[in-house]
Length: 231
Image (cartoon, rainbow, N blue to C red; front, side, top):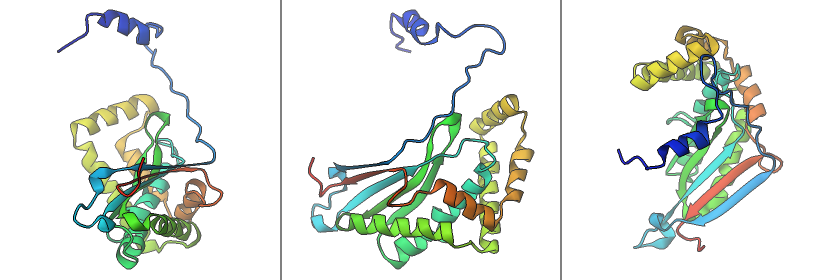
């Protein structure tokens, strides 16, 4: 490849302080979540409907406190995330998308790798109804925090989570992940999958209260991109 001529200097700059030998893996500290609300509005001309600008779309990202990978809460958070925003049976799809018509596409996201990351929501909404869409999203966040999900919905979602994990383990990246987990935590796929058996509707509500933010007082980031916004 096109390796720079000063590659050895760069390696020393970034990795020279790391000791050599066995058992020298760098331990990454857990990053603490930020405090307060950060809201950013930016122009996104790519979403402009040139024939009818008022029919343009906008994209919304809402991100908040992560769950660290392999924390005991991860099993319930993964389940809660799907119940909130994955597929046609999720709260966000049914109520923000289908019922209120405020989202063309809406889903939850999650990344807790290496003591960092976030969980959040990504939505494609009408550019003229951004604030209304955000309010509707937080209504569903509040719903899953205060209304216990039906046991049959939780059990169905747990099966979907486990299926997704097992299919990942069939990939090359999944094999690497299994090795990493085995070395780091002396854990196995069977032990990790088994953790979902401890998830209950009550546990889903508990982690929703713990990780999902309150609109007025919570700590979270909102990023909005709209063609109707001028930078």
